[in-house]
Length: 211
Image (cartoon, rainbow, N blue to C red; front, side, top):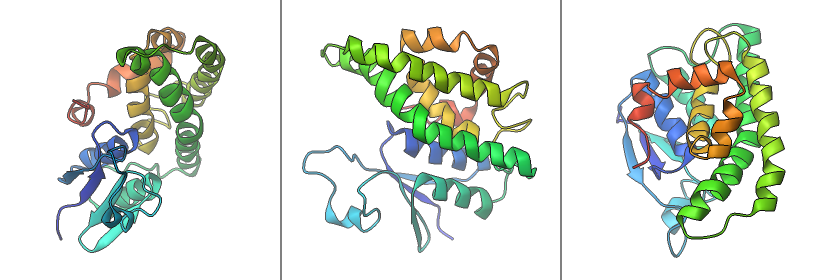
């Protein structure tokens, strides 16, 4: 069967999650560049791949798929390589819980919130919204504390082995930790700090870092 194709942009957190999953499974793939924010919006042919005009979209031979959660679980189950969903019932539930936290809280608060306000806006010459940052910091701390508490003494977020929970959180943390505020908040959680030191240097992470 043909190599999988991932449609999207390198800068996208969710495109990177899919790329990390493929890399950790040892699966070669083609990244088909697609910028959802390009002038004029998505072309009609892309809407056939993703009717909600988001990225990524995915294809494996004649099988097309969208939604990152569906794509990553498919990749984990369709290909050989180390399993990325825990076999243990409780650890698997914890993995799914952490993915939900990443989707619903980490992404909006740590990436679209702290990173955009503290890093991206100043880099583009725009003023950061101090009131927005002040409101975001407690939300970011709640998110980090929840993840830290769930991780406990494990080396990885959902247990003793790397899982999809780690691959969801890592691209978000990579943006978040570019902000001084993010680094300060992270420093209060020794287990997350140690986790980041492990995952940040994995070949899947260094090989998918946006240029």
